Length: 320
Image 1 (cartoon, helix red, strand yellow):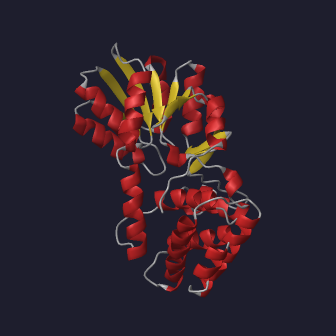
Image 2: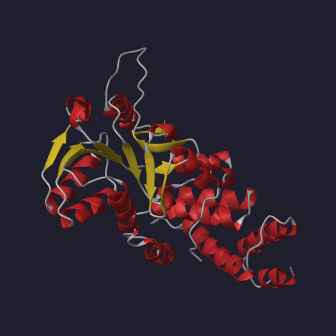
């Protein structure tokens, strides 16, 4: 405890406040981490806070930094802070960022490089591609593209169907990458999936977040999965453990900033709607985990029941 106090005395006001919060957590046996890590986190947070006054920093970055400040004040737990950084950095575009964020992103990307290939390898080992199969893809997930690369190297015959994945049309990016690998891709509107589902062998999707009971993905994913379940087609969700979000670490307002409400402006689907028409323009949705056949992450293959355990004991990345 004396070591924490001595470091804090030589720090900025926010740095001192962070140490005060973390010191109280240690006193309450809520935090049992080395002081070196506390030191690094506090310095990083102090540097991030300075960005709030920088006019060149985007509002979304400022919102995430404010969420971090709230987390530190309400739940000063190193595991929670690491977990927040995980999702904070997952959302950031590395281009044109201030030096402190660039440095964080370099460490982050080094920690997680090739993770999509690890997930793809497990998918290749778990899903039966020994015979010619048809797969239906929705959205854009790096692990799925890596799986396509592995399948082409192994000489597997696969018929690929890809939805456009509205409203963001991410499916176009994935279709282009898989076509460039060497597979012919049958590209279609989301609402045309019923035309091909009866002949599909597997449905492969990604996601934004994995929660204990459900996961967050593009709007339209729920309809696709429900239709695939009707035809008794296996549904595999490919992602990595960064996507796991243990909600117990975060107060509601911080949690909301990570998940979001998933709504887009009304005018994007109806510019001048008549009176008494309420526009619900969803860009993403939360879907029950029990609809998924298997979750394939870089560290294992899990049933919906098993993914609950993974969420409860979420392993956060060590970024400091």
